[in-house]
Length: 539
Image (cartoon, rainbow, N blue to C red):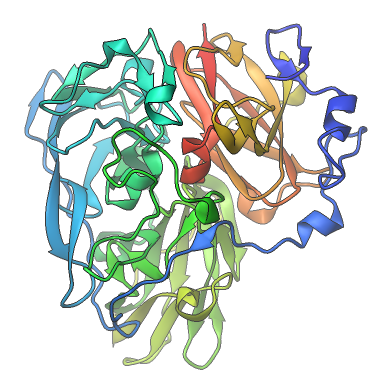
C-alpha cells in the first residue's frame, strides 16, 4: 500500500513519501500527523449538490414514519430466520409525486431487524432487481462469507454468468477478475452470529462499483442488537425510542430520484459525472424516508438513535426550540454501542455511516411547542432536518445513569504488534481520476494488509478532504486527532471515524472475531465506488 513494509506485513508511509504528498497536507514528521490551519478551514460540504425539479413540501408538514420491525419467518436451533425480497416499487415520498425505489421488502428504509446478543440471525435475501446486489451488515461482527464482500454477488434471473470477470471502471475495455468471489443466483442466506454489544447497525447494498447509486435508490435498512446490559438501564424505550435514518436525495421532473450516474441502468459503467466525483448531495432531507418530517410526542426524555444514511453529506445536528433555545444532546452511545459514561453536546457532527445514540429531554416544554432538529452545516432547506411537536405533558420514569457500561475494551499502545499509516486522497486509478488509499485504487485480487486473529494494531489515518473511514468486522477506539486528544464525540467504540480536510487520526483495535477477507474504505459512497477501498486479510 505504500513504500515501507512493517515487520508484521503491514505498510508504513516514509517521511519523504508523506511530505511528497504536497504542501496542502502540511504534515509533520514527529508525533504523527498534524492538522494545518489552512486545511482545517475548508468548507464542510463534500461534493456537488443536485437541484430537485418538482415542487417540495413545506418543512414539518409530513408525519414521521418509524420503520416496522420484521418478524422472523421461522426459528430453528436458536437461530431466527428472516426473509427479505429486494424489489422495485413506486411510492409517494414527496406529497403527490410518484417515485420509483429499489427496496428491501417494498419500503424505504427497509424493515428493521431486532436481534438479541448471542442469538444468531439468518437473513435470506431474494434479488428481484434488474442488477446484481450484495448485502453488508454495517457494524456487524460477521464471518467473512456473510460480510457482503463487493464481488460476492447475488445475481438476478437472466444476468450473465460473471465467471469471465468483473467489469470495472470503464466498461468492456477493462476486466477485473476476483477468483475468490462467491456468487449465487437469485437468493443468498447471510448468517450473523450477533456475538457483539447492543448497538444500532444498518444493512445496505455493497455491490462492487455501484454501492452509491444502489443506496441512493433505497437499499438501506436498520438492524438493532439488544442485550441484558442495556435492558437493565432505565433509558427511554417504546415510543420514546426513535430510530432515525437521515439521508439526502434529489428528484427529477418526472418524480424519479435524480442521480448523475454515467450508466443509468447501473449495469456496466460505474461512476458519476465529473461535477459530482467528490460526492453526490441532494437538496431534500429525508428522515426515515419522509421529507423534513414532524413527529408528535410527549414532553419527556426521548432516545434518538441517529444514522447518517447519506452518500456524502455531513451534518452537525442541534435541537432548537422555536424561541431559540438549544437543548442538550446527551450522547449515550456510538457506532458500537453504549459509552462508559454520558457525554453532553449542544451540537453533534455526524458523517456518512456514523451512528449516535442521544437523549433529548422535552420535559417542561408546553403543549403545542416545537423543537427542530437542524443541520448547522446546511444552507436553505438543507439546514432543516425534522421537528418534534409537543402534544402533551407526561410522566417520565426514565433516567440517564452516570455509568452506562463497563465492558468497553482497554487496548493500550504497548500491546500493538503493528503501527500502520494510510493516506486517503484523490489520485490516479487505472481508469482515470478517482480516490485512492496509499496511492493505490482498490483491486479485489490484491491483499493490502495482512494481520493475525487477535492482533492489536494502531492505524494512523490522514485525509485530503472529508473522508469517513469504516473498518469491517471490528470496532475501534480513537486515540488522537493530530497530536491532540480525541474530540468529545469520538467517545466509545466506533467503526467509522470522520476525518476532516487535512486532518489525521490514530485508532486502535483488536482484530478478533473471524478469519478471512474483509475491507476498510471511505464511506463517502462515491469515493468507495471510485477506488477508495482496500483489502484486509485476517489469518
